[in-house]
Amino acid sequence: MPSPLPKLEEMTDILDIKPIFKMDLLWLWIAALGVLAAVLFLLYRRWKKKDRKPALPVPVPRKYSPREEALRALGELEGQRLLERGQFRKYYFRLSEILRIFLQDEFRMPAVDETTEEIRPHLRGSADLSEAEKSIVERMLGEMDFVKFAKFVPSHTEVSELLKGLRHFVSTAKASVDKPRAASGGAR
Image 1 (cartoon, one colour):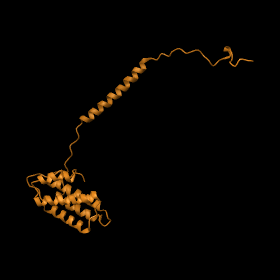
Image 2 (image 1 turned 120 degrees about the vertical axis):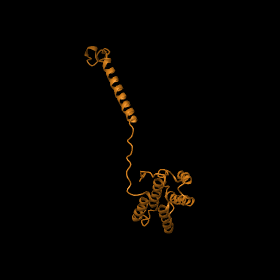
Image 3 (image 1 turned 180 degrees about the vertical axis):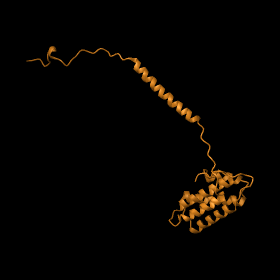
C-alpha cells in the first residue's frame, strides 16, 4: 500500500522559513512627524480663531420709532388673517413678539429673549411705566402664554380686547426722555 504522504522530494509547495523582515524606522518617524505637524497646525488654527474678535454690529438707523414699528407690525399681523384660518397660536406668538420688541426698544428691557417670568422683575423695576401699565403688560403676557403654551382657544371677543389693549398700550406708553433708546430691533 502506498504512503498517503508524498515524498519530501516531490513536495514543492513547502518552503523554508523566510528571514525576519527588517523595517526601516526612518519612514515610521517621518509619518509620526507628519501627523504631529498636522495636529499642531489644527490646534494653531483653532487658537487663532478664538483670538479673533468678532466684528461689532453696525447700528442700523431706524426708519420708524419703536411705537410706529409696533403699530405697523400689528397692522401687518391683522392683514395676515391668521384668526380666520384658526391659527391662534401663531397669531399669539407674533403678538407676543411685537410686545416684547416694543418693550425692549422703547424701555430697554431685555424682553425678546426672556420668558414672561424673567421679564416680570424688569417690569416691576421700571420707572418708566406706571403701576397700571405694568399690570396691563403682565396680564397681556400671561394671556398670550396661555394661548401659546396651554393650547387655549380664545373667543373672538377676547382676541379683539387683547389687540385693542395692546394697541392702546403701544400708543400711550412712553419711556423717559433722558434714556437713549436701543439702536437695534432685536430678533425679528
